[in-house]
Amino acid sequence: MQQYTAFDRYSRQIFINEIGVEGQQKISTAKVLVVGAGGLGSPVLQYLAAAGVGTLGIIDFDQVEIHNLNRQVIHNEHRIQQKKVHSAAQFIQDLNSSICIKSYTKKINVENVDEIIGDYDIVVDGSDNFTTRYIINDACVRLQKVLVYGSILAFEGQVAVFNHQGSKQLRDLFPEPPHPEDVPNCDQYGVLGPLPGIIGSMMAMQVLKIITGLPVDSNKLTIVDTYYWRFNTLNF
Image (cartoon, rainbow, N blue to C red; front, side, top):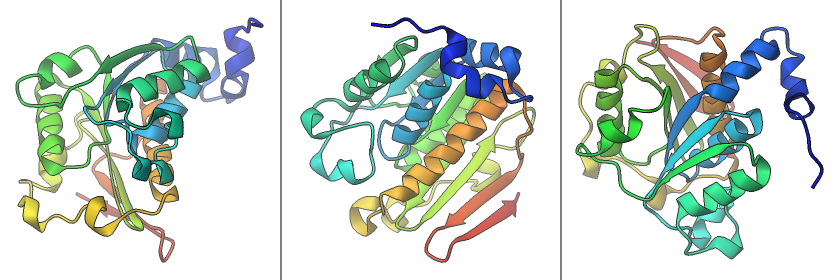
């Protein structure tokens, strides 16, 4: 196999004045935990691995199903019934073998969350339920970790950055989680495949901007409506 230098691989990022060699070095030493290797986790992991984030943690207890493949682009037919973290790790290894991958085949909960996220600089929430979202958020507040948040449903997605340089957290926007029976989900209402690609890419961009010290919107929720193609920002 031909050997490539870091400059060979990342030159198009290094050429950006705001990134440069110093920014790429920050990316290569960053540690990012991605919660969920599904619709949002797929593009997040893909682009963070491609950018050269040095350590990527992946946590997911689920396995690949055929209905995942319309949107979870890092998985494929050959990995159906394989654990998503293992499928995701293989995808990353094939894309960028220099990445350190840490896999957690478990469900995140109040007992293990602090131990899991403690070693990471940034946490990316690609989970699909509010219970997990609040567990992650509260742990990030306790441990002073930056949290990049995203959600998707049908044609609409949301993105926000919490707990960054003194900015607000999820509970400042939504103080308490809604009752589970009041929350629509993808199993009921579906999701069009490109939507998580859009939202996940936005989340990955936020992660890379945080790592390299570029400006990041604080205390703002970006709402993306791909049906009418509207992008709105809610200040909180």
